[in-house]
Image (cartoon, rainbow, N blue to C red; front, side, top):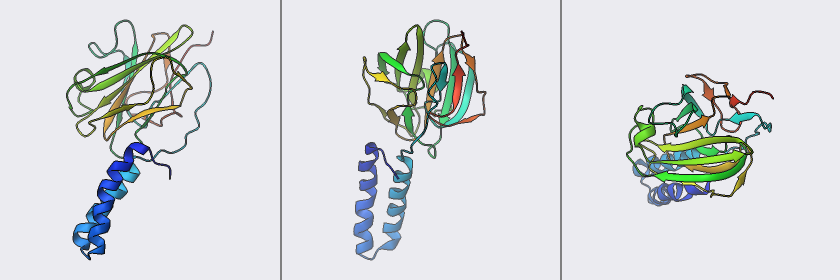
Length: 210
C-alpha cells in the first residue's frame, strides 16, 4: 500500500516506542501504540485513482460526504457569483487532495484561523484554510482546503504557475477536514447533500455542452 510521505513521522512516532515496549515484553503498553501506528498508516494511505479526462468535468477533490451543493454561501464563497460543493472528510476517509479541474494555478491564498469541527457551518469562514484558483482558458474553478478540530495542518504542494491535470495530487489535510469547491453559475451540479464521493473519480459538476 502506498503511503504519503507526510505520514512517516506519525507512523514512526508510534512504531518505534511500540517496538521497544514489545521487545521489553510489555504488550499492555506496546500493543496500543502498535495499533496507533497501524491507524496512521491507514490514514495516510494514497490509493491510485483513475480520473475521467474530459474538459467539461469537475471532479471531487477528496473522498467524503457532500454537505453543501447549491448557491455559494454568503461569507464563504469568493467574491462574485459561484455555486458551492462542500465535502466533509471523516478521519477514516482518504485524505489525499486532488485537483478537481485541469489548468494553470493562478492564485493560492493561505488564511490562518480557528479549528472548529469541519461540519460546523462556521468552519468554512473561520477555520484555517488554503484556497487555490485554477484556470483553463475562460473557465475558473476555486477549491479550498479547510482543516477541522482534528486536522491542524494543511499541506499544499503546488504553487502559482503550476499546471495540473484533473485528478492530479496536490496536497492533503492531516486528519478530519473539509473541502470546498466553487464553480461558475453556468455549471450543472452533479451531486446533492448526502452523496458519498471519491476523490479524482466522482463528477461533482459539469460545464454545459457548447
